[in-house]
Length: 378
Image (cartoon, rainbow, N blue to C red):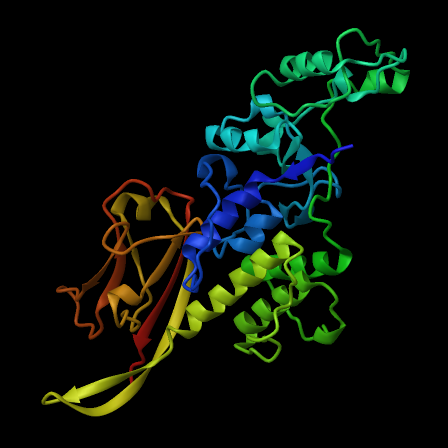
């Protein structure tokens, strides 16, 4: 029997973002088709936690049970996913892509309230028919067309002329959502590292000093450790640029390792030396520092269409500024500009720098990650 393919569109969405954002695309990648961000960018999920530098606490949300999420001070992320009803999926790009699977595919979405209206539910066709019916190829084809209605998962079990006799337990299942699944097979070790990553990205107390790196067995755990070790300690002791942690057999692990490499490279390249010229001659050189900030856009910032950067940290080069909006890299001059202003009404010596924009895409509650180089004041 042909195995059904399990597809997580949210992972497809982040794969496209990571590969497009990457400063290290030294080889040609066949990028997946971009999916609708309004549908697949979802806050309290393990994928958003891993791949979004601006992951933040989602206030007021909580999980009704430990099987669907993990509670952290009324905030949570979920590692659980549910099978979706493809007839309820509205992303046309995804639906077109599903045609390559000839119906042998199941779509999984995060087990969060926002996805409640697309969860698949138990139907008669989910149970084995009785009566010893042996369908002909023509009957199978007609049943496939009937069940699919265009682009739909085909169960391959329920055919015209069969009799489905349900047990009392099966009858109670009809209309209920399919059970949650740990679709990425997250282990207890990985979950511990994910919880520490959650604490770091939500600005809570976090330490990795109690972890022995060599005792970690999962590539995902090791990559999270390297990321946290860099972010907390600016240490690359356990990072290897020669031997990858992953072996290419797990898409999530491989994609996250690339994400971590990209992130560390992007930060390191912001800290470099520049020449100081006197009368067109190099007189000295100075080292640049870097800083970053994670921002949740406020109502005032949306209205003013600008965000004030830290004082005495004027970006050395505007084109050197890296900004991601909800995890997606933005282009200078197209999506934002850097304004340097010296307030006339004050005697302050430093220039105020702003991230400014003229469009309406940056909304209140959206997330921005900003990374830049600056010349340290002596």
